[in-house]
Amino acid sequence: QSDLKTTLKAVIPERLQLYSHVKKDLSSHQIGTQTVGSVIGGMRGSRALLWESSSVDPNKGVTFHGLTIEECQAALPKSKHESTDPKSEMLPESMFWFLLTGKLPTQSQINTFSSELAHKGDLPEYVVKSLDNLPKTLHPMTQLSIGISMMNNESVFAKAYAKGIPKTDAWEYVLDDVINLIAKLPALVGKIYSNTYYSGKNLGTINMDKDWSYNMASSMGFTLDDSVNIKDLSKSQSNDFVNLVRLYCALHGDHEGGNVSAHATHLVGSSLSDPFLSYSAGVQGLAGPLHGLAAQEVVRFILEMKNAIGGDINHKVKIEEYLWSLLNSNRVIPGYGHGVLRKADPRFTAMIRFGDNRAEEFSKDDNLQLVKNLSAIAPSVLTEHGKTKNPYPNVDSSSGVLFYHYGLQETLFLTVIFGASRALGPLSQLVWDRVYGLPIERPTSVSLKKLAGL
Ligand code: NMX
Ligand code: MLT
Image (cartoon, rainbow, N blue to C red; front, top):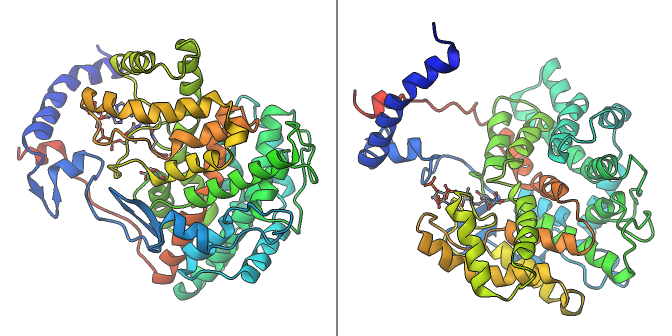
């Protein structure tokens, strides 16, 4: 008598044969409003989600309410401390305001909003205690998702819903939760960083007079005035780090609705799970290596490649050989390819520009140089390999090595910053989902036999 696994194994070959036939021969067939290819191909090309705040053009990349990255950088409010912070990047809270309302905020609106976020930024005691009790080996992304989902204990939306509210009022409670959730991310990120790498030592404080990104950097110990300056940064390096967090988080905040983290948040929220539960689902999607975890994978890959090519970062042939060794062992080149984009990601270019604007600081940074060299070499290798539809660098290609430069070298942590940033777009859409009163998301499924017409 065969056990469960053996029984399953025996039926796989026949099913796989049918799957290959459907994929190869029937992909262009129509089933309802979809093609068969879309049903079995990760819903590629299916316009199935309502999303207001950003859109992604395959050739031009992301725009936020129609504005390009450069236009946002020019138009969105920056740090209010202009005299001490002259190189300030746009603030993620400015981006959130813009994503949510479609209106460009004024400096004074953002000054007030940054202060509101700082005042709401403390973590509930039970969250701190629970995080303290997690194993230090638990991946930081798992800790992030646990921390966020636990705070559903604070949800004003869940409490109001339990009491009974008119559907038309739901968005106001959801908005309160969304603001509270975003406000608590700097302290949560810092707590996870400290617990995982610094034995829970208090690395810094939330400064009520400072912006969200400064407070994230501070709670991780990367500022001079409000934290322990754990990496011994100079004043200008610490300012750079804060600005890197600002730029990174503003840019990674939203990438239309179909990416895994945005879609997961939207889907879970459609059952009227509160924003904490909904976004923790998004974070769990972001933790996959084909999505946000690529941020950590790229840095590991760059360091391993540098080692494997003996530090010859300008040696084209050695780099090509290394790429082929990965591809031939059926591994992906992290930081390359995309489900929608067909050109280099403009967010990649913006992050590279961040390094180029600090030429002296980065002049001896081999990792960034290798990332740049790679972006000139990998596309032709991937094109020759012939599988990926987009052989160009994506958003994760450059950002990790910039953080690494300033001492954030705990590679498993890099996606946590992505996790803080991605809250901006999906949670702003969640408010609109409730404004519109969108229904529970419930597409229908279809069997392989049905697709094959059997
Ligand atoms: N290296 C090697 N092979 C690749 C790569 C790559 N970078 N990108 C795509 N392919 C392969 C892919 O695995 C697939 O192979 P198969 O037919 O054997 O299944 C084939 O090319 C066709 O894939 P595409 O249709 O071009 O890409 P898809 O839309 O399925 O996937 C990604 C998009 C981003 C998942 C894919 O390009 C990838 O795995 N990239 C590397 C991981 C990465 O950088 N992810 C981060 C994306 C950005 N983010 O933050 O989310
Ligand atoms: C993202 O920012 O979510 C990634 O580029 C992946 C995507 O858009 O699918």
